[in-house]
Image 1: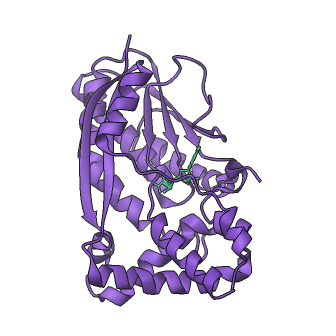
Image 2: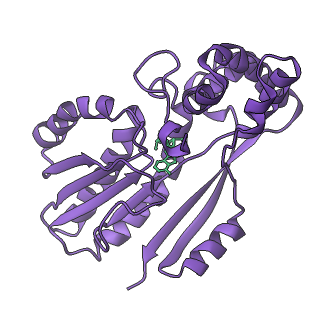
Length: 287
Ligand SMILES: C[S@@+](CC[C@H](N)C(=O)[O-])C[C@H]1O[C@@H](n2cnc3c(N)ncnc32)[C@H](O)[C@@H]1O
C-alpha cells in the first residue's frame, strides 16, 4: 500500500489520539512563535492584497491545527493595525494527507469562526482543506502568501523495539524486512544546499532549537517523575506512528510494541542526554 494512504496521525479524541497527545508539537509551536511573528510582521509591510492566503502543510487534527492558524491570523491583524491599514480577508488552506481526520477539524470550525468574528471582531476568515501530499503540487502557481510546516519524530527507537519483537517471534521477519519508513533527519547544511539547488526561494533565517525529549512534559506538569514522563512521550509517539505501524504489523502487536517502547524511552533517558532538534526555517519566494 502507498505510504501516503496509510500515513496519518491517530484520529478522533480518544486516549491514544493525536488530538490528546500533541503536547510536543505544541511546545515547538510556542518556541518558534517569536520567529514566526517577526517574519509575519516583516511580510505584512510588503503585502498589498485584500485577501491573504495561508497554508499549513501537515496540519494534522487536534488542538494545534487551529492554534497555528489563529496565531498567524492574530499576528497579521496586529501588523496591519500597526501599519494603520484595514484588516485583510484571510483564506486558510489546511493540508495533510488524505487519511487525516479532517472531520474533527471541520467540526471545530463554527466555534473558531464565531470567536474570531463575533468576540474578537477580527476580519473575515475562510478555512478550507487541501488533502494530498505536500511533496506534490497542491496549489496553483503564485497563489500563496504564508506557509507553515513541521513534521518530526524519534523513529529510531521504535525500530529497535520492532527488531526485538522479531527476535522473540512476535512479528514475522518478512514484515520487518519489507517495512520502509522513509524518515530522514537532515543537517542544516543539507537543508541549505537543497534550498540553494532548488533555486526559487531565498533563505531568510534558519535557527536550530535543541530541547530534552521530556522538557515539554516537565513544563506541562512538573510533578511527573521520569518514568511517568517516558510514558507520556511513548503515548505521544504512538499517536503519530500507530496507523502506519498497525498497517504493516497488525493492530494486535501495538499494545506490546508501545509498552516495550516506553521501557526503551525510559532507558534512553536514564543513560543519555536525549534531545530533539527542530529546524525553524523562514523562506521567501524570489521575484
Ligand atoms: C508531527 S505532525 C504535526 C501536526 C501539526 N502541525 C501539529 O503541530 O500538531 C506532522 C503532520 O504532517 C503530516 N504529513 C506527513 N507527510 C506529509 C505529506 N507528504 N503531505 C502532507 N502531510 C504530511 C502528517 O500526516 C502529520 O499530520
